[in-house]
Image 1 (cartoon, rainbow, N blue to C red):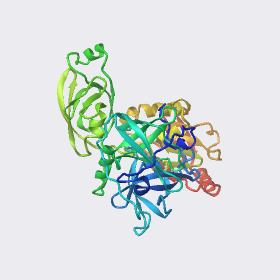
Image 2 (cartoon, rainbow, N blue to C red):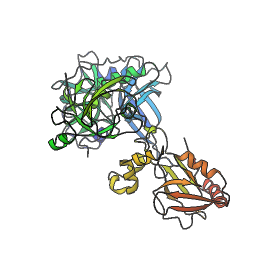
Image 3 (cartoon, one colour):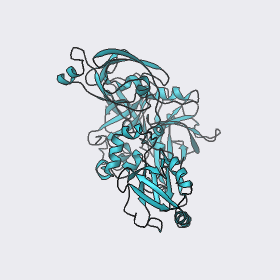
Image 4 (tube, rainbow, N blue to C red):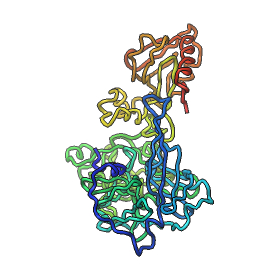
Length: 496
């Protein structure tokens, strides 16, 4: 489990309340360069996909940028139904809109809905500084309830590559140490050096008094991408790899006499590596001219050893081409890889879903869904053991389903007890292969198959596993659909 607790836990944790230095004599101060951000969030339900959870409030701080823009973490406004900016001192408020967001990089930019608002009166935009190195002292900014600014010193322990917000999505980050005070608006906090923005606090461990900071180099890349109005995001290579520390393993793969290298375990379908022809079993020796060691690291000139992922997600842009030197079946090979970003909806199983609900289709009480990682995570922290095993396994190894031509994995998630589903009530969590003989690639295929009236009045649903086949009466199911609408399920499908 990640040792860094989410920073929102500050308000609940028993933190050591050390004195915090008031900010004076700096070019910018908290009360002059940050605003409060108020959000109302409403998450979608993945176990009951036609429902949404109760609205919940969230409060944080955003950094003021040029052009009356406010920088916050994307986590601050995930599934938001309302966003508001508030002046730290005067209390002036204005409704906000999202001008740009990237959940993988955990960054968002807000703008006021009313350009004549007084929220930015007297405030000064922050410039960015990406010069931070290990050993430096930074300041974490907060705001008291009365509007006064508070600054706490933290020391940069190291610069590393790690997870931001989305599982499996890693970027450059600063690891810092210091004791932070709990504040009611402490969900997301700006981090500065000499009055310039160097990052946004992502997480904090009150026990270790250590924190992770989303750094300015990633923020700069995010803001630069937004400038032309066509946000493309950060590229990904699309491979999983194994270290090559074992000498026998190195000899088997023909790299015993070479330095470093990582073994390509899997190549994600449709990703940068896949489209460039990188294959499972290749050994990558260098990326963009940087030698990759046996652990998957390279030597960064400023930060020291970093994961090779930073060469892709921190040093390149979508559309650029990087050169990979590799060994394939014992022979050296150089491959040019045009970089692209594979969007979450392009995966067989969506790795995350925000600001959009799960896709589903209900027919006569049969509830079908497209499998997503958030659905599996709905089973709790121990979801890998608690969620249905066959679905967990499919998430871990989607390649067999992709090779069959599936674009999404459609499964029967649950069965409501109705006249149409008698005898089927115990069936759940089984993957659908065909409906009325039509192969099901996604939820739209399933809806289309049920839309056609079968010749004998019975729909035939085939599954990958037990019970293999069930039959559903078309006329009775359509009558049940009308009753479901009357008794609480307002929408029988979400196909987009």
